[in-house]
Amino acid sequence: GLPSAVTIYEVGPRDGLQNEKAIVPVAVKAEFVRRLVAAGLPVVEATSFVHPRWVPQLADAAELMTELGDAGRHLPVLVPNERGLDRALELGLEHVAIFGSATETFATKNLNRTFDEQFAMFEPTVARAREAGMDVRAYVSMCFGDPWEGAVPLEQVVTAGTRLLDLGASQLSIGDTIGVATAGHVTALVAAFAEAGVGTDRLAMHFHDTYGQALANTFSALQAGITTFDASAGGLGGCPYAKSATGNLATEDLVWMLDGLGIEHGVDLDAVVATSTWMAGELGRPSPSAVVRALGSA
Ligand code: HMG
Ligand code: MG
Image (cartoon, rainbow, N blue to C red):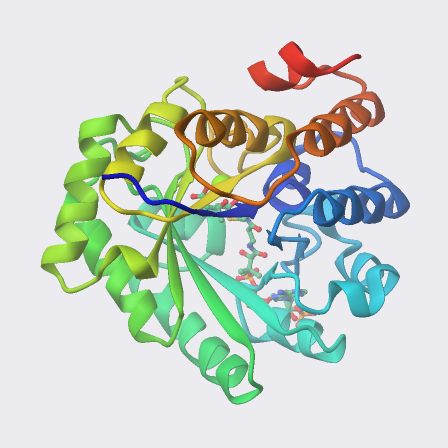
């Protein structure tokens, strides 16, 4: 059967805004985060402490977290390396996320590291974060296909994912960075992790909706026992270092489906729709989310 409750891990302020052409003012970002928290989203990933030249959209990470103050301390932020961790530690943050790649090519393009070198970069980062009492999440990207390498074997994804978990991460988010996953592939990958001893309690799913499959994939993952889903308010998102990456599964689309299934999530749908409608105005274009378009007033 399906789970009775799930956790929605909101990535709009990070995955959404990292891909916007325009630089969103820090006050608007802070308002976006505050509204998402107020809408009942239990986890809101706020920003990234990456190299500002690599992702200029999030160069204001320290400013944003300072602006959020105590209310932002428990919100996760991306850190790729010790330099990023130091920046998060200086601000007293409590939750970081590293992000690895299942493929050699994307490790090189996104992290400037080979497949093996990425773990060498993460190892001291996670160790020091854990020593400081932080919670560490790990992402693994290109789990269902890679724009340069094509198909990605299940075993390769499981190898990358278990190596990240073994560093000391509490949760592994399985990234369909370019949105090519289909429902059966999701089932097969969850089963491959189970065979390697990684149960659904340690996994999250991170779907992008490039091919319109994100909800079908989510349903498949629910049936497989997954209870944490990444989503982005209004369907914002994408990765600047992955060609053809578009928006994440929209939080509103996910909430609509969960409501229909009677699965608890604790999120106020109207409040998220109102937030995405407001954000679409700030960004100057309509939300790609079908549910936002159906329910929104703008
Ligand atoms: P690098 O050029 O190899 O860095 O980049 P380096 O270690 O050689 O250091 C070079 C300089 O950068 C040094 O300064 C460092 O201090 C500085 P210098 O000594 O020359 O003056 N530096 C930093 N400055 C600020 N913050 C830092 C930092 N690190 C080094 N953290 C690096 C390596 C990892 C930094 C770079 O490749 C990078 O920033 N990549 C980030 C790319 C990114 O953010 N991509 C999007 C997120 S991933 C994603 O969206 C996928 C996901 O959603 C899941 C999915 O959908 O699959 C998570
Ligand atoms: Mg992503």
